[in-house]
Image 1 (cartoon, rainbow, N blue to C red):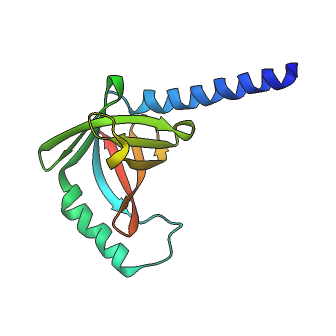
Image 2 (cartoon, rainbow, N blue to C red; image 1 turned 90 degrees about the vertical axis):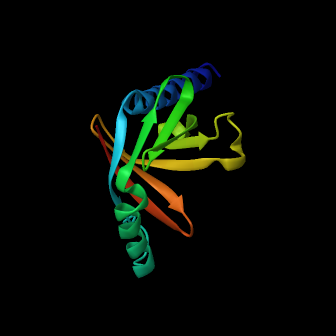
Length: 138
């Protein structure tokens, strides 16, 4: 029993550390989308590839994301900012983005593919497909 409690405490501490590291890397930076790709695990789909290119050249051509204190999230698309709340799930591997009041009625789940001091790649759903948004710190 003593070992079970000890193991549970270690797992909880490790989980908190990974979420904390993700939060630390995300926060107080302006992440600019520079590329939109198709996840390598997805089967080849010409429509999805065309949509990725169209999204890169259109909707995401002037897109920025910011993660701030108190779970504040700001997305700026085409010069128009919109805010919401974010929280980290699954040991910092999933970001839940919700409306400003925190309601999960319009929740968007973003999967962290790559994250370091200067690069943040995220897997997002758009319509019937998934895309990888590749961003860089500005």
